[in-house]
Length: 156
Length: 156
DNA sequence: GCTTGACCTCAACTTAAGTTGAGCTTGTAG
DNA sequence: CTACAAGCTCAACTTAAGTTGAGGTCAAGC
Image (cartoon, rainbow over all chains, first blue to last red; front, side, top):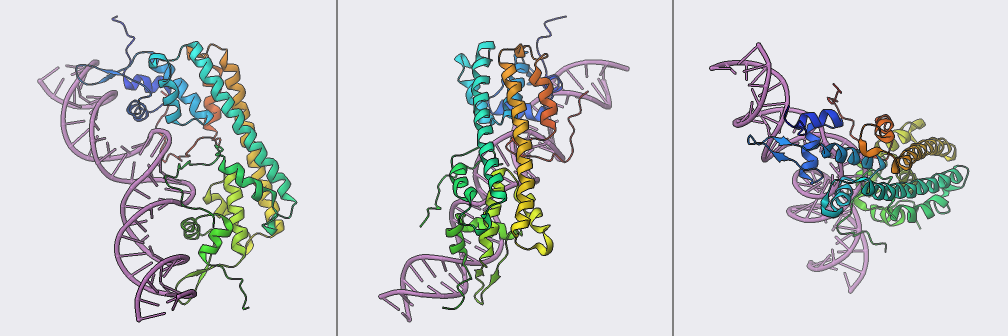
């Protein structure tokens, strides 16, 4: 029984519930790391399970892989989060989530107001008129966020 | 003063705040319609503004173009929504929004619980263990929704 | 009558987060 | 020692919602 602390991709996939291809992908993105055997196969330390768990939680919260990567990388020495690190991360993420919920509520209330209102006259719709601002501020509910390299849609 | 009721793409873009290319795109998707001049240029009726307004609101709520298209198409004769139609649509969408908010709240509460907890031991994390279910139910917060044609990630 | 500017089509590119497949290597069990 | 499972790399594909660009037409002002 040599130290079985090393895990293969397949084992990590099984235990973490993410696909092997996803693990490769995360590694390419720098979210997890591995070393290789003489035969070029990946071996992971057990800490990878923690990292993957965090990645999954963060994703559910709506954090992009890029952001997750930054958060993990910003930790001292890029170490796998300790309990304290995790407190920091999860607190920040929870706050983001709170914010998103608040935005959605605003939107819902707008929509509620809108239901009986004169929306159909286009110009005096509360949602149309405050919704714009809301959307431009970048809430997370849009399916795909395009940074839009050059915005050329200037009004007038 | 002949009926100036006809709008060019550019005019619609200006008045609705969406790019010309997006209007083309919506048209290709069947969300809006136009007829053409002898010179093959698009002309829109004023109702297009209403449709576009609705599309934008629905998008903010997190509805995909496909769903919006279906909703619009499901109206009798595929007409541009009347006030009553709009009531129906917006009510349904608001309910969806409510649901999404509820999901996010659950997630946030899980995260809150998680902050002080023994998460880092991976196995006994409440979020890890109920979060899975939550996520699989398909909440809207994930950035990109992949229908995943064949799911092959069967556990054990 | 010609030159802008708005319009047209169509194809290719973008981002995110992976998946799928081909073609090849490793490792292990019988 | 030889299969066969698992691993490897790399490229191409997927979805959503458009954008960007090339190459060509239309309309209006001067």
